[in-house]
Amino acid sequence: MRDIRDADDIFGLWAAVPMPWTKQGKLDEAMLERNIARLAAVPVDGIYSTDSDGEFYAMELDEFGDFVRVFARCMSSVDCGVQVGVTWTNTQGIIDRIKVCLDHGISTVHVCYPYWMPLNREDVKRFWADLAAAAPEARWVHYNTTRGHVVMGAPQYRWLADEFPQQFIGTKLATKNFHELSLVISTTPHVAHVLTDFTIVPGMMLGGRGTYSFWVNTLPRWQRRLLDLCRDKRWDEAMAMQVKFNNWEAQCVEPIVAQGYLHGIVGKIRVAASGFLEDAGYTRSPYQPAPAALAEQLACDFRQWWHEEAEAERAAWNAGQNAKPQHAK
Image (cartoon, rainbow, N blue to C red):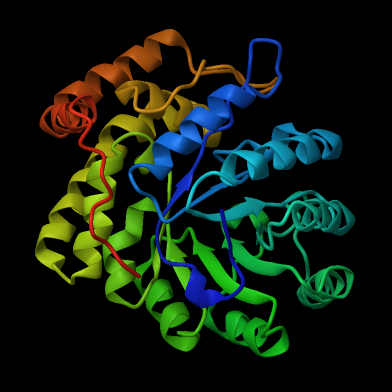
């Protein structure tokens, strides 16, 4: 496990490891450990959890503490960076979660604004000041999503970087707007701006550092290649891969999302489509798993869209050809 201390430590391919529940709604520790080992062997550059795919919204503080303890133990045996999401509905809940992470040797946390009621301008300033005062040794990656109601743009990030230069080291940019990406990345280039799966190539062309990825849980070697192509500035090949992925999501996954199966729920049936990682498919109420018919339809679509890529992945793993490819910061 590599603790993250500054922006230069954040780069490349980061996996959003899914939250494996048992039928009784408990953390499946053994499954989590196996999945972490499998992702590390890809290799990924880092592993994180308890954002949306990590189902942070389903855990109270004591359970969060138990998870971070197990997560840190599992990560201790792999050579990957580590981060943890700490979003909650109020400032104290976020501070409590940050302190849990620090207690287990994890310095860098993903922070989204409390998401029930929008913060005004002064609330935003006070929020970051309260976090800095309560846990100055923590390092922040701001999760910039509309679900936090307050969407940060270039001026806001410039203010945050100037006001808290030690704590604020990165972003998780959920926007798909090229203009916004361009302004944010160019205004604060010393911050580690990291993209989601939908904008990896254009974002890295603009100076982004990598991706916080759910797709690596489904086609890991394909996603590793995409990041390596971006590193090598082989943009034509990378963009062709980006377009295929975005078309797949639009045509096959968005119809499921439109039915209300979001975040970790749809993430689980993406994982099941390839079988690269283990997951029993369980979730926590009130969030229910996607119906079996939808899961089977997505698996069928996956076999049609990604037949060659999936065959190549299986052949490589079955042959034991999982030595680390040459990739670098």
